[in-house]
Length: 222
Image 1: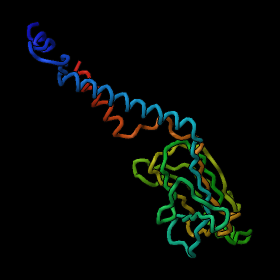
Image 2: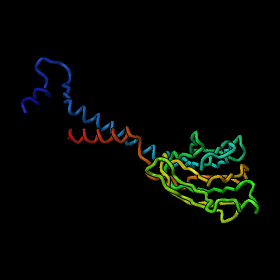
Image 3: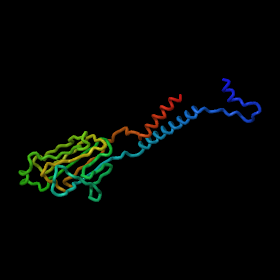
């Protein structure tokens, strides 16, 4: 108590008003409160901004990238406004013509493949189990078949479905050899559209770490 009085009461002969001394603990506590308040305000503004902005819809409409004779089962795709009605928005085509997902969520897939030079005379030479498949081929941990279609003796296989996809999933389409797909964009196409993005997207990493660190530091000061 005597020490506090010496701090607050000026000595005899001194002039001016007494100035209370602030301990370093008080300064650090105030800085922590201000920093935590600033980060919380930033997070609140990010939430409000996300509610005002229209949700992005990743989508792609692809046409066959026909390169002549097929050497493997995999079909290769291309997408660009310069090609006509095809495009890629928010997703990615790798060097092998396969579609890669950049954002996780529920996607709608649709595909149609028409066989080239298909007629009643060529059906007899067709492999008995000719199939068209769409699946996740990469990463290996997510590898799974999503669509498996049969031509049923006809010239066209087509279907669609909803399926959850994760960030980094690569979609591959396979057609039984030696069948040749038609390169006509009206007859052979492949499309993907995000219909429901993953909710509760994580905050930026530095925000979460900063909030945790400051909260722990603030609790130690109390």
